[in-house]
Length: 214
Image (tube, rainbow, N blue to C red):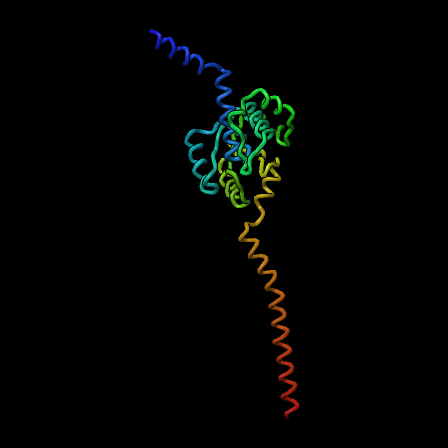
């Protein structure tokens, strides 16, 4: 009988809205620790099958990524908490302290450049600890198929907030390999031109010597 009462009390405790909020808040802080880079999306009646297909497509471009529907107010507060907490060399925070009174108090002093984007039904596409333009470019390409049901609002990359147009601009930056190719091409052109000039000069000298011999 006592066991049954304890189990019922534990179940009722878990059903408590405050406890659920606390658990969700902790999960969001942990997600931000794993992936401080993310895109913010507005979703509109995305079917489960569509959500599954989109997840698979996005993971092709960002294998460590995670698409997650969020509670706006709780995620926004978790982001404020994460940004206000001291971080280790790899961006880690003390997750045990994320739900303390002090952390919540400090979070209220934080103002972020994407706060205004937290409106309507939202999802985050967590990109992982690091991000490259080609990953974002691939993700935007995948999202175009669902543009009526999943709209990119902006994101937070390398601790800075960006709107849709800025994210789109970042996606167009050439990859590291592409930049290397372009740089080598730029450096090789003058060399090719110099070689052509030297070949022309060598031909002129040979022609001049030939005329003198004659």
